[in-house]
Picture 1 (cartoon, rainbow, N blue to C red):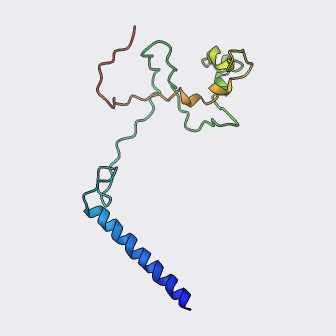
Picture 2 (cartoon, rainbow, N blue to C red; picture 1 turned 45 degrees about the horizontal axis):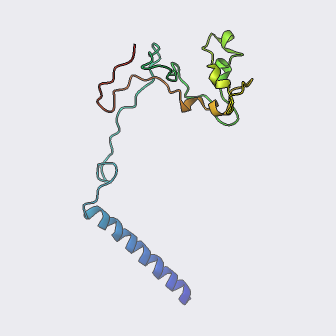
Picture 3 (cartoon, one colour; picture 1 turned 90 degrees about the vertical axis):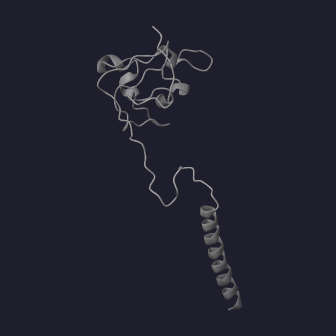
Amino acid sequence: MKKQNIISLLAAFAVVISGSFVVAQQTNGSQSLRDVPIDEVNVIDEVQKQDTTSRFGRNYRQPPPLVPHSIAQYQIDLNANQCLSCHDWTNAGDRNAPTLSMTHYLGREGEQLDQVAGTRWFCNQCHVPQANAPTLVDNDFTPSN
């Protein structure tokens, strides 16, 4: 019975200590990473929607093209890549879709492969959906001709 009482006393002590630590953290002037106090609502900026009305131009030579259609429900993992159902060279003609660059079929040593190289399997590493989002940082960048 004594052991149970000691365990209960230690648990109660731990709750009191942790509660006072939280109060101390809020009153000593420390700031949260959200820039608002913990007890206030954190307002999130508007989420930018994908722009599928037209294709965006490229801003410099040989960037990865932006994706002009939704890929929200696409499966791209170790087992499957749904992008290839349209963009693989075997299907692109029938689907009226752009074909992957031949660089996507080169192995690590530069050898030509019949399938997409494992290093190019995850399309959304480089290709992102196009969105007409505002710039996050002011800059004076002008696209090349």
